[in-house]
Length: 251
Image (cartoon, rainbow, N blue to C red; front, side, top):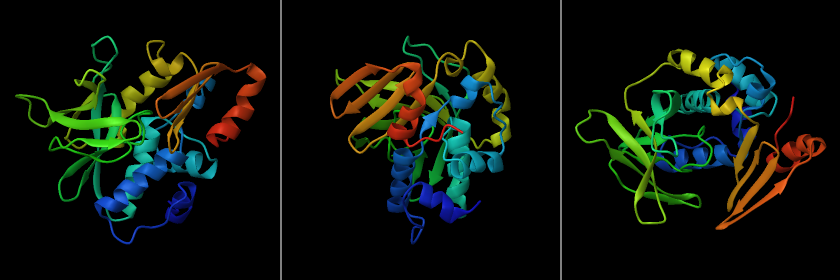
């Protein structure tokens, strides 16, 4: 891995030391510059769990990816920069209150003054490390916390504050270390199964300073603060919009 090329892709520089301030900067810049996207899934281009392949795609070809690619690659960068991190697994909460495929999402746990959840591969979620002690953190996308699951050792829910002052679970994660290869079955499911939401329509999304820009199917969705707008995209507009609005190569 060429660390300097990776940092340039994120429009940031090598941190002086691996501390919380540096981790916040790296996570924020990654989300602002590297899209979450499923172009290869839609094109039926196989995705293999290999860091060198992820690097060539995301850095070499200026693409994005989904959780295994983005968090797998970012965790490797963090280790190169001196951080103590490991991959962990999470189960995604569905809007209907049920759970997705067990432990099919890859995230990162960082150890600093305390343990922090770090995730650059979940689309619209926390942009800053979330401490596991329950302390809420806030950014332009919402307020988040990690809540320990009662009577369950090493299990936490990543939650976002709702408009009704309650908390909604985004996913449930374990602090147990996982290897990249342990996600092989989930990676295959998410890129091939008709039950996977990644196989149903194109999705590309990237954070902005004040919100987010997303292409979902044939819709361009923009969020700026509390204002959300949608507009249809004609097929011939898709490629140029991916390039111009998400700074995403289509190669």
